[in-house]
Amino acid sequence: MLERLRLGPLYGVAFLLVSRLCPLDYVRTEEFGDRSLAYKIFYTSLIFFVFRMRFYVAWTFAECACIAAGFGAYPTAAKSRPGNGPTQQYFSGG
Image (tube, rainbow, N blue to C red; front, side, top):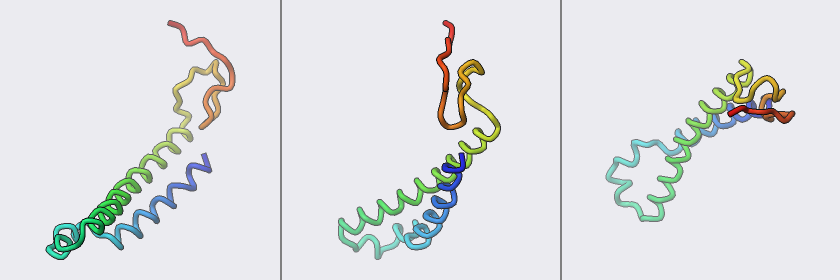
């Protein structure tokens, strides 16, 4: 879990830095419209990077919270370890 938890702040810093360097409002300006296609594609990819980082921060912290709370998808008989899944074979009935 600590391995995953370390990534959250890294994603957060990346989000803050790139969102300051590449604000979304710039896309709506006339200056952006006058730029080359290659520049527009590059800038748009940075904007999508910012959106991805926002989700990665939320998903990382949500995953860590679920692991810390002991939520899981495996029955007790599987003797699962947080973040690693089942350690023993189990019968899932059905």
